[in-house]
Length: 255
Image 1: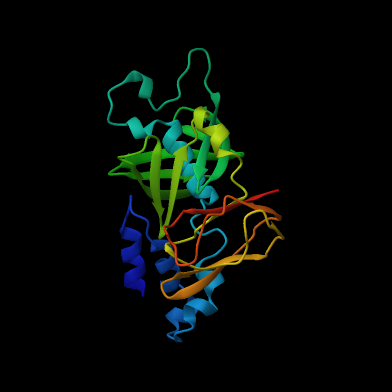
Image 2 (image 1 turned 180 degrees about the horizontal axis):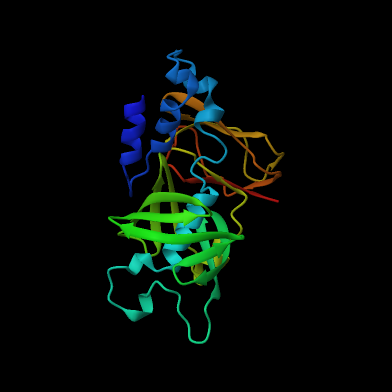
């Protein structure tokens, strides 16, 4: 299990949807390490293996993504003075910059104070150490953190980040996309690839927080997707037996 954990941390996948984070959660689960396994293991520990924040960026990942984009590391190979990483401006040592990132249809609004190769985010200083072979190393507070960041070859300002065994994706929200994107809080996202087994609600139906919306099957295990907020179901076009990929918008709940 330890060898597999290390192998997962050294494996970086971009492009195709995958369940690397899920597999990592299995191999680090106490019951798995204790070898107390049976066919009900995944169903019994569903909330541990697929937590509410599955695929969601944590503070450290957000800090690294902000540093990556604000220092222009996505343009690090271009010999262009406009892509300099020092945030230098005439007549000032620091400046405030704003950035909107999207992670699994959740908009993250960032306001950072930039000074040289250091940014300050929510009173936490993030200092650039190195960026080599797609590995970004930074000091977040007093803790050194590193992650592998792979820019998308097909989409502008889009990255896939691997931090430990966790993989998250970010893209910059462009002004022309913002009106279409919306707040994103009511979007119900598929946590991993799978098949829709049963749709439990209908378009236009009013649901309560925690109410089961649908059942999907992934790796021969049924997972119940519940409403994170109360509201009215919208844009529901799913049918039983439909195949969905990780990150698919299954429906929306309008408050």
